[in-house]
Amino acid sequence: MLAASVRNRFPLMAVGATMCLLVGSVSMPVRAGAAAHIFVPLSARAGALPCRPGTGWSVDFFYDIPNEEAGNLLDAERYLADNKIQPTFTFHADYLDWPAGPQAYGFDEEFDTLGDFLNGHISDVSDPDALDLPFDKHFLLRAGGYLKVRLADSDPIFNEPPRVSMDFGLASFDGSRLRIQLSIFRIILPPEPDGFFFENPIFAAPGAYPMEVTYFQKYDTNPEERWHRAGFEMYSCLPGGLELPGADLLPCPEGWVASGIPTEFIYPWEDVLPITPGDFDADTDVDLEDWSWLQRCFTGPEFEGRLPYACEFLDLDADGDVDLDDDEAMMKQFGGPDGC
Image 1 (tube, rainbow, N blue to C red):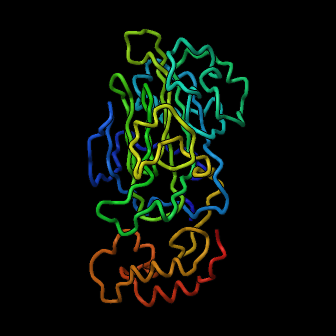
Image 2: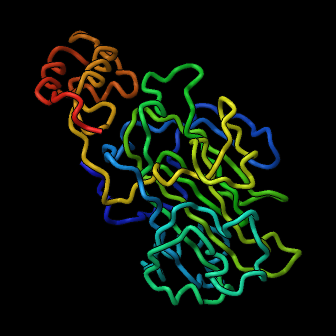
Image 3: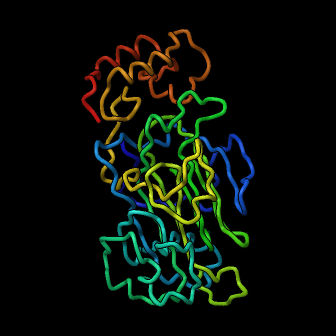
C-alpha cells in the first residue's frame, strides 16, 4: 500500500524529532561539511518502481516568511506548519540547482526577481506571474518525489563494509534538509566559507522511497552577515546526471563523478505503484529473481531471533521466519518476469 502521505504532498516532520539511525560516522575529507552512513529500513519503502523513467521533482514555494519567523529553517517550517500556510505557487523541476548555471550561488542583491533566482530547470509553474515577485523577502521551497532505488543500489544483507552507491550531497548558504521518509534528517547552518554536507544512505531493499529536500533563504544584503548569499545545489553519485561545479566535494565510489540527481530517478507522487507480496526487487512482478532472495533468506520454521534486514519482507505470513509456508505464499503470486 502506498504511504498515507502520498497526497499530502510534503508532510512536515515534528520539529525537533530526530528519526535517523546512525550506524557509522566519518569526517568529511573535503572542506567544510559532514558525512554519515545511515541505514534506511524496509519500512521506509513506499511502493514499487514504475516501468518508465521518473520525470523529476514537485516543488512548493512559500514566499514572504515574516521576519520574526525567519530566524532559521526550523523557525520557518514551524511557522508554515502551525499556520497551515499554503504554497504561494508550485512548479516542476528537473534538477535542484538554483541559480542554474556554472555559479553555485549569488549575492542576494544580484537577484531582482524570483525568476532571476529560479532561472532554469523549472516548468509547469502554477502562477507564472509569481516569478516576477521581488527577491527581497525570506522564502522556503520544498521539493519532493519518490526516489528510485534499484536492487544494485540496495544492500539487503548489509555487507561489511556496507554497500553505498546512493550518496547525496547538498550545498546551500542558509539552510537545507535532506529527508528520505523519516530516516535521514539533517539541518545545514553552513559554516564559512562553504555550506556543504553529504549523506550515505544504505537501503535495505529496492523500491520507491519518499524523498524531500527543503531550502530556506533568509534575505540579507549585509556583506558582513553569513546570510548574504543565495544558492542551492543537490548532488548524487548516480551516473548520468546534471554536471555541477561543486561535484568534487562529494567523493563517489569507483571514481564516479558526482552530478545532479538524474531526473529519471525521481518520480512524482502519483506514479508509484503498490508492491505485490513477494516482489522483493520491486519491479512489479514476482519471478525467479524474487524467489532467489527467498532462498537466501530461508530460515526454516524453527528460527528464533530477528530476520536480517530486508528478509522481513519475505516473511509473507508474518510469523518471524522464512519457511515453506512463505514459499507457498510466494508461488501464489508467481507470474514470471512480466514486469519492468
